[in-house]
Amino acid sequence: MFLWLYADCSSDCRVKISASRCPEARLRQAQLFNLDIRLVSAVQVSCRLSATLALRQRLADCAVARSTDWFSAPLDRVINAVMDVSRLYSTTVADDIPEELL
Image (cartoon, rainbow, N blue to C red):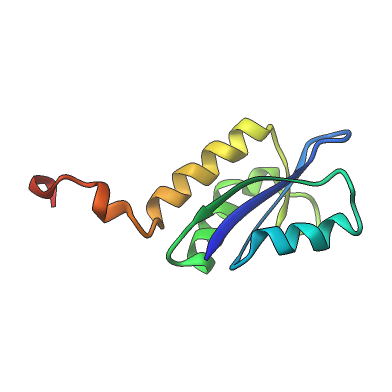
């Protein structure tokens, strides 16, 4: 599963955050309605729903009204949040931790 981030920075930078098995297919669907939308990041996570919820909570102050997955925030802030959350829900985090710390 992937946690992904799309952005439409044609005027104000708005980002969509969600999760799916195939972010590229979701991007193609989104581009049917908005040609300016681009895939910014897609990171593999182990628990997509928990990761998505954690990311939405982290960016709650930037949420677009009446939307659960659109945010209006500087792109670097959103990317940093995605990377932080993906580390928590990464499928390979345990492989990166030295054995003496486990």
